[in-house]
Image: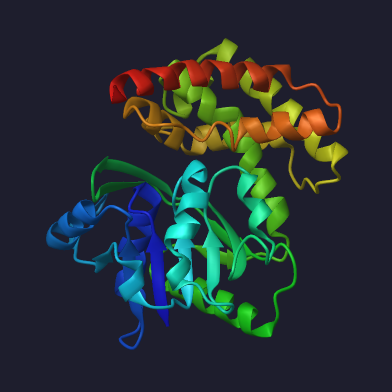
Length: 314
């Protein structure tokens, strides 16, 4: 199999570093970057993978030339949600009707691609609680182990199922705890509840996940944000297996030292995925006449922080 990982950010580099030693000799794995200069640098220096066990320099093939790579059997999309449309156009030469395209974005805005009209490949969706921090280009710290779930939103046939199970086995071999889920939508919403409650607040307060719990005000905001999202989900008949607020507070405790992806973005003067997370709740809330004032407020506050990104760019 030819396996591609799109996007050399924290999660993309983590998956590349863990998968590369796990693939068979007859398989091929490469990291795909739309920036030629960065791809050349990563080819030269490799990925620096850092964990509690120490550091490893892993040399993984990196390419920015989608025209020369050829069709891929499996593609992991690890780009930010706001870059997804451009990324799909960029990787079009890699796609065939049998390519398994695995979305690993935050939020739920990417679920629109479960449609042949929007993606010329087989869409699969994944959610991962692996903690990864990008310290510098190609340099990541594995901040904490988690679980990765993969699945289809709608039936895709036996061949696609076999391919999904095959890549799940490779992930397992690489040390990423992975499971094929028969109800990936429930898993995606469960992750969304957590992101709704944690990510924006970590960016606003400039705190790690666990530090949110030291503030009564922050804890109260977590609960209000998540309850709004839960109300939207229940109105849409989304299955909920665990109390979303309890689950979110537990994630804060388990990942106390983690720096959320949104806080990493704010600290590095990058755009955030607030629209795909809290924005998705507000968008759906308006469609079904559910008020979401706390989520609207958090969006406004994060967008104020994003203006600092614009100043930095100028």
